[in-house]
Image (tube, rainbow, N blue to C red):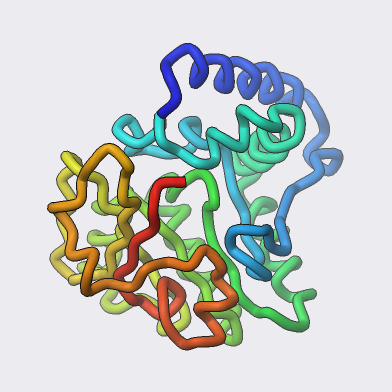
Length: 231
């Protein structure tokens, strides 16, 4: 677990970079969409800045694995996250346009994960995620979120999510998680405990490679409640 001073140092670097990118022309901001990584395999993904762009993270920020990446690689990971955050803040239309364009260019491994870091910002942001799924029916798309009320409100007002879009509610011990529509749940099993508040024995154990899950037809991309060990 990261202490407060470490987290504050990450946030300080992020704030300095944010100030720099807010002064740059939007067209000069190099948007970062990853084609995959060692953990999630060959799945496209987009992130924003952990903590800055997570609306319900006070309980989990000290355990956040993307904060770990920010600590290890501040000049690359924090920089990439902040560039995306600034573009989202300054021109939301352009932010989503660049994601759509990147997905249009994808010819294989059509998987897309929202938010290795960051979370759903607000109701408009989530609607744009929905529109993205509808515009890319050939993609398997998923996300993890603690912004439960935004998702619950959308389903209550609009009905089921698009069939190619799975929303996993990220469960955290001590954080109320209203789930009236029985959405799938994802849990990080901490080394320090929390082994009794989730049915680990009867839910899918995440292997850490999303493309493996897609090939097997199991796991988060297919709406199966799952868990992973703290890492």
